[in-house]
Picture 1 (cartoon, protein in one colour):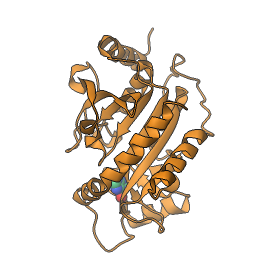
Picture 2 (tube, helix red, strand yellow):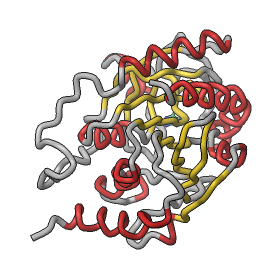
Picture 3 (cartoon, helix red, strand yellow):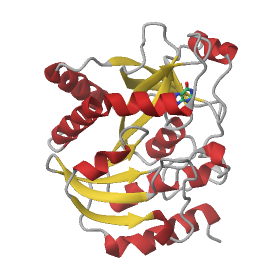
Picture 4 (cartoon, rainbow, N blue to C red):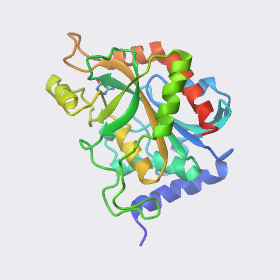
Length: 277
Ligand code: HPA
């Protein structure tokens, strides 16, 4: 008997596989602030999430829902314009389905982006953080359930979730572009409420530098499938309790929008270099 999670994935793949304009090398997930990146590249094709039967569709305001195919700085790429979050009520296997699907489309590299709260006191709103490692154990693993042997092993090794060579390349790219790039550990919590000050402190004590509600589960699923992964957080705010100002979704959006041009430049240039790596 086929596993229902695998069956759903393969059904989604069957409905997109004849619509791909090319085989993508890079899969790019556009987080808050990068969402309109897809409007600034020469779009070759799009597939609306609504047109893929069974595909999870985001309910968050400001999050679009489609795959966008384009050559980014010469590299064939598929972008996710809009992702779903665990807090929207989807099972974790649905949350990571799009990532698995992009791997089936042919993508070898996963480039994750997000907006996150800084928990490191050396960070400021508007900073970028290259993700070096992550803490995902506060959300259920997307690998729970019967293992999908077709995708990867039961007990996946997570010693190097974020690819060392990609980390070095992005670090060098940022330096050459004169873009300041912090580095650190991303902690995924469920949300949707922002963290309490004590939870923020907990993240810091555990070695976290930024906190958010996405990304780490996607990286777990992608690593299970053997993808090379890199990720950058846009620090849209300092996490709750670190400043006197209450946090709002509007602030997160405003800061992400303000620094978006630099973020796009870094992503564009980094992907260009992935063409040869
Ligand atoms: N916490 C969690 N997720 C976030 C934050 C935050 O402070 N900012 C942007 N996404």
